[in-house]
Image (cartoon, rainbow, N blue to C red; front, side, top):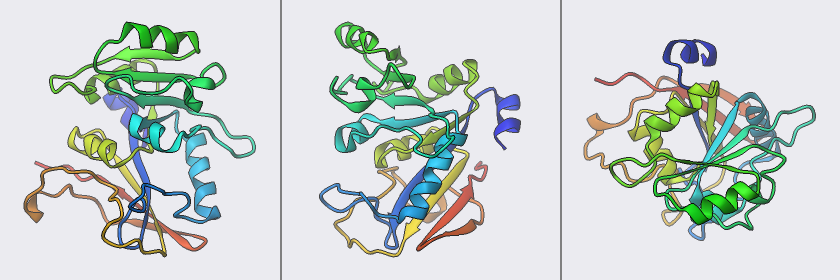
Length: 228
């Protein structure tokens, strides 16, 4: 799927991945999400990071979790890190900044900030300014830019806002959902942010899932259906 999508569209094949509880929560009400799934599922995630050319998150994930976004499996390959940060809020102390010399990292903003650009570049990161009409990052322009750089696949590991944006901008080809046998209740955080859907017939449509058991957890994989 990655190869055929890339050679026909010249944009990356995009997978949206998240882990949730059996009642559909991405995190507890405090924002804590480590760890929802077990070791087997988490090891599988690192195999995905090795297979996909780039990993994409939003600044909210950086601020909440301070992740490294690398591949921690023997013989694995670290992906290019792409951080969507519309207003350049990533602190220079974040681990993605401090390790930008050793793992290629691109920050994508929507509003130019010359001082922050210079600071990030000094740390070894690259900065792209791709603002859309709504003051946020232009997803379509970003996918075209990544495609032009021969990035054929992207794994999204963001939060609810990034997930909703990817779906709304039609920049998602595969949805990978790890489901853990846990319950957080109604005040937990949902994996998809507000999309303005008012009736079931307006929902984003997915294929029947492929189901894989990973220790105590399940992996459900859906392709996105064309909608007219």
